[in-house]
Length: 240
Image (cartoon, rainbow, N blue to C red; front, side, top):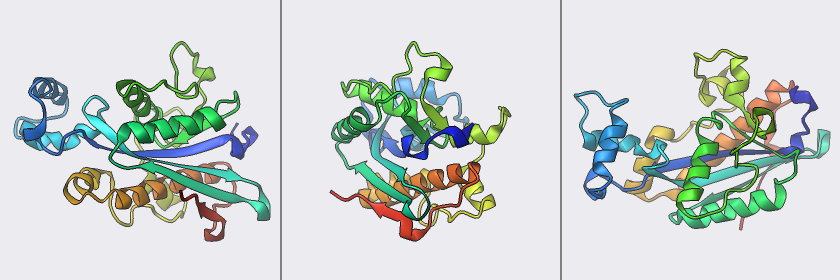
């Protein structure tokens, strides 16, 4: 039951990912046939390999993380505060190392939880895979190897909304709309992140978008718990 979970045990998160190379011409020859095979599952005959490469960012084998934003809620009532922080930039290994340090230092207790929208299918495994590729030890809370389902400390707002209905996908945008939560999609959306990164080089814009998504996930979970959403006065960004 969600109401039995302490909100301050939860770390909300979202990631933004892009293809590891800016365009098809830059992709190493050893990877091109592997992408051709991978993309067969979704690429129609009318779509070229070059055109399909813009989807490479959603696969950890062909993409990389450019931003991880996190948020957490402390206190209750008039003392409630939401704080957020982002790890972002061009050096994927460095931002993953910093994120791992946060998890190891503050989210290694048995009651700690990670929460994301579609996190079990995307965010959590993607981060773990990219950590392995970068030679980083996976923090315990992300490492699901050998664990029973009830031992995995992950919450997924999309899974919670399904109530066992496995055939549907519900976006953050739809949930924020029906719960009357301010939308995080007021600038770009996930499909545009690759272009913003490789063509504009604007990681700050990507970070802001990611940070808004994390807040939306936190607001959705609060509504699932029957609690009021966070007000502007309760929001604080941790800068370094």
